[in-house]
Length: 114
Length: 117
Image (cartoon, rainbow over all chains, first blue to last red; front, side, top):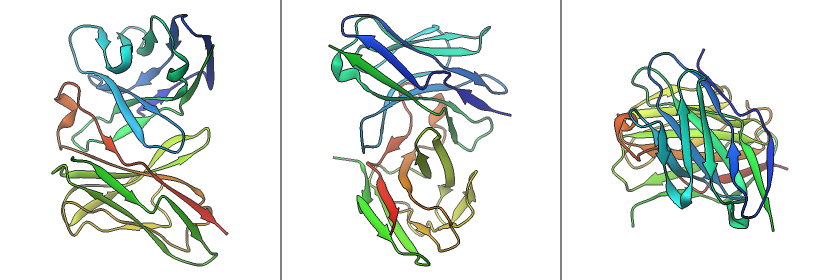
């Protein structure tokens, strides 16, 4: 079965420190992996995506993600957190086949404190 | 500007009532999706459509219905059969085959919050 797991409900980090939001996946075939961010009462915004190639993917707002095939992980990272990065983050994987469906993790709340 | 619009932003439903959530996009996307968001449960797929006049059930389709009469529109009806409809509903759209396109994913609307009163 295809699935995405975000093992942490909440991540707390001080402003200026590096942050990591974890994601592991299970999918048949080569994965297409995504990170989205959601601010309160809003839709999700696309941050970045892994298709193939370089294991380090750079995205919007200074975020990047590292793809690790052996660990089936796709952790989101940022070298220096901002208070404005506080939001709900979702990892997703595209379902196999041609349906275009995305399977989302349960989300991780990132809290950046001044 | 191209985008995806959901309305209304807030919706209140009485017991036994059907309600319809609107989703319209002007991005010329073929595929559209409805997700339900509950706290701590992430997003769960209700229905999706890859082409006009065709749609498929997602993981939690019971108590919901959709139509896709136009490419731009994918309304969701929450029927009285849905026993726990209070949630945040998100509509999204994409190109078919977006998976292989760099820096391309779903475009989401801003959501409709449905509450049973």
